[in-house]
Image (cartoon, rainbow, N blue to C red):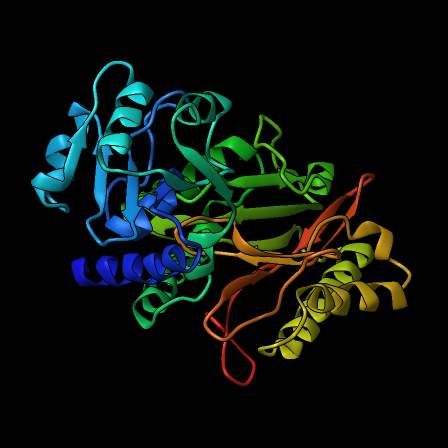
Length: 355
């Protein structure tokens, strides 16, 4: 993988050179990981495991603190590691100046005001959004295989979890069982906290599992994902707990699944993102239920659960071959619950492939 990280940095470097920057400061943890293989997570929200300085000249630097030095040396040449201690930002500023960085691009979405204020004193800072994300949106063959494997694990967990769905189980207990199954079967961690919702709670798209216990004749909505070998999965299923699904649930499930099929069948490279959303929305509108479709159709997925592109009514951009997205229409009714059905989908040269 080391050569792949170097190739990614070279691709970013070409953008830096085109923009006439001396360097580019990578602050977002997932971008740092994508470009170096170093640490995906920061330990606390007020700390940083480090940043990358991608230089126009080709001598890139990994900046971190002493806690991460040994880990950094496993993926990076020690002579190109800068270790900061106290006064992290002031030490970084001094290092950048010593490295003759006079015009430095940075990831504006990941820079705090404190970071900007400290560094902007003696260096010309240029804010940018999406330079690394533009590279990440198209998955390599290796990434597609890793995402497929992560998705397969998700399917295994969904198949196995059915044996734990019974009257009296709580939402939180079922969520905990899902988490254990992910970890016991190869996931390093969860991609996000599982969503398990019974009855009217299923009308909350991001419901938090609680003490509510399962009873007969209730809908169940489960949305879960794991992170395996660095890549995330994300899938949602809706079930009915009882011998015969209620008519309102069955009709809603059929509408949601048909909207999903229509959307997936419509996927083509070059398609406007917002037009893919409209496929599902217009179908729901034709059935008179569009007001119950309250969120976007999906999102990109990879190192993070939510990546570019977002697929909603105002999304700007095009579908491209090699993107991996979710397609997850849903309908939500506060009086009884809701239904969502989600697949991970690879955009291919001539359509789509469900992972």
